[in-house]
Length: 327
Image 1 (tube, rainbow, N blue to C red):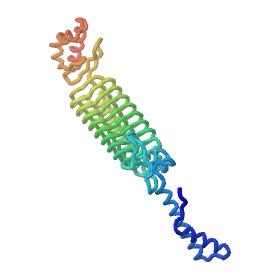
Image 2 (image 1 turned 90 degrees about the vertical axis):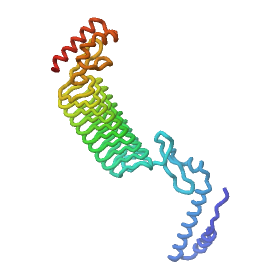
Image 3 (image 1 turned 135 degrees about the horizontal axis):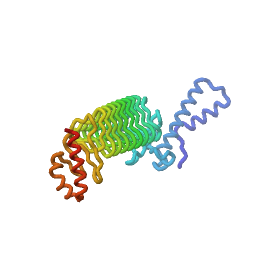
Image 4 (image 1 turned 90 degrees about the horizontal axis):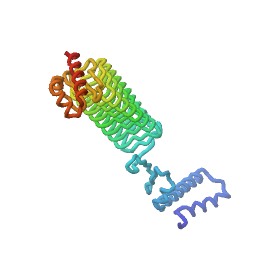
């Protein structure tokens, strides 16, 4: 590279030589400082503009990309290539420049907030949690572990979303609710109050889980179903349609409708389970019929599904017993 001789260097050297034998005045010192500042600035500009891009970027961390002619711009790969981003001052987590995080909010060093996500108030994102899409985390909510909140989901209040939980779609989790382990809340679902959704449970569509309800196991709440009070939904239970489960009801089977303040009947037969899926309907195997239809057509249905005569007799006794209980 050619030596740099910006205008003013020779004059400055000459001036300094003269002043070696003379006592400098205040004006001399000021002039020297101004000349030195001007020369330094020109040298820096010369180096910055003349260096190729690859030489600029090689000296920076791999998260950074230099912008020729200016200070470097940081980037981070959120999974779809490097994009402009920065580290949040409260926690050190990576935040895309398109996202927004309040200074009062915490984002841990291994966390990511990307796309158009917003973390505000006293919200905390820690562990390896991710917030993306148009998701909003606010107030005193906490998202931690490997949890992921994305799309248009809203988490607020004193909510806790943790471990491997997912909240997505237009779902909302608020109040003192908790979603954890491998649970997933999505669609337009709402989980609020002191409700808890955990293990492999799924809450979807327009379903609501509230108050002190617990949904766990492989249970799935969907449709316009509502679970509230001290209700417990677990096992492989499915609650859908317009079903409502409340008070101290316990559900292990399948419900499609009805307002349940007591636990629906559930019987495990020698082959398939029998669950009361409506006030007067039963779900056996993959079929759901009214109790009267089961009594009338049960023998034919059983034969079509490979039931032995002994098994058909057993299940008809169960069905008649359930009918006697709900009358």
